[in-house]
Image 1 (tube, rainbow, N blue to C red):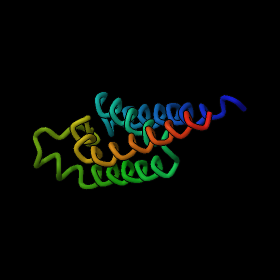
Image 2 (cartoon, rainbow, N blue to C red):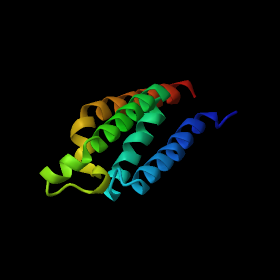
Image 3 (tube, rainbow, N blue to C red):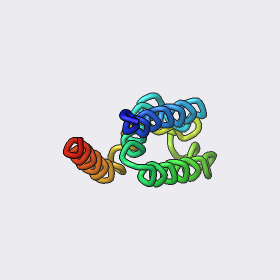
Image 4 (cartoon, one colour):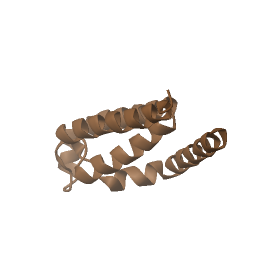
Length: 117
């Protein structure tokens, strides 16, 4: 079990890729949103499952709220995209502080792992 510490990051990348691909196909995100969402989700899941779950709840609830009342939004907003597609501009302002803390957690965990080995 020497390489067991690699399981969580591999899991994080795989799950994040599947979620980003699904969101892109369902037109919840454009390509830049899917790519940045993949990076953010992979980082959160690599830091720990609870961080990833919190981000997933945020993503799915905000996606549902974006699609709620889509017909009204389409009439009001000339730049409204089908399915309420969001891009990277929608991600980073709202998750910047949270993502910064997750990176600190990851660096701390890696430091501890280096000290242990």
